[in-house]
Image (tube, rainbow, N blue to C red; front, side, top):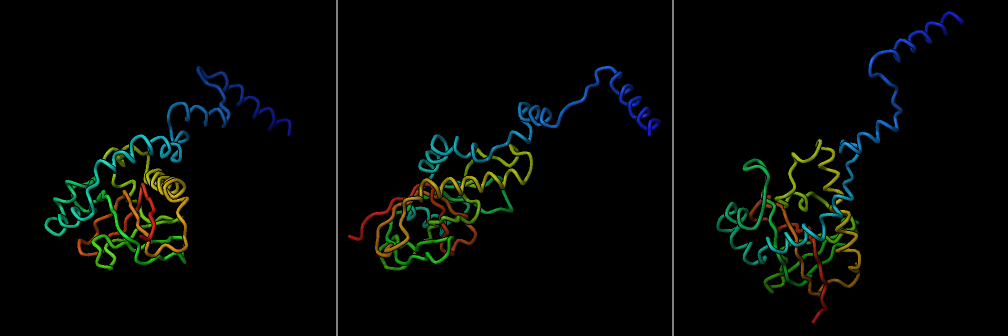
Length: 218
């Protein structure tokens, strides 16, 4: 046993004798990574909060076209609508994410699920033209994907990129949607600034709001 201990101590002494060599605690390593801006420093919730009111909401309000105008241009040329009102990071292989301003009346509310939605009639014919997510669970990554100043290349990996999308959805649900009721929604007016993925031009868009305001039934 003494022999083994002597070997360990000798090895340790030799290691410490190497030029520039020192032992580093795990917590010190984590701190160094954070200070260097490494993976340990990534905070998607803080990133979302810092950008939300100063960049994201103003950007979508400025970029979004009225739903009627957006829908008409999509019917004519989806790519032209995407270039004017939307964004996609790659030129091909992924759908456009379109920003829009939507004003209409709720004709149906689907609130049994935590991923609740409302069907909204925009043109006054009593038929839903769009579906708006009201949470609290928000599906998809449209909020992230519709921002031309957020690039995948700015993230360390796919996991961090996905975490940021989730943080955006959570923050939006806690701010824009937190005070929206879940009862007696049908017939009420609603105004939304939001985004949707242009998967198929003929489908009703699933709009993820950044701003949502309920009106009365008059």
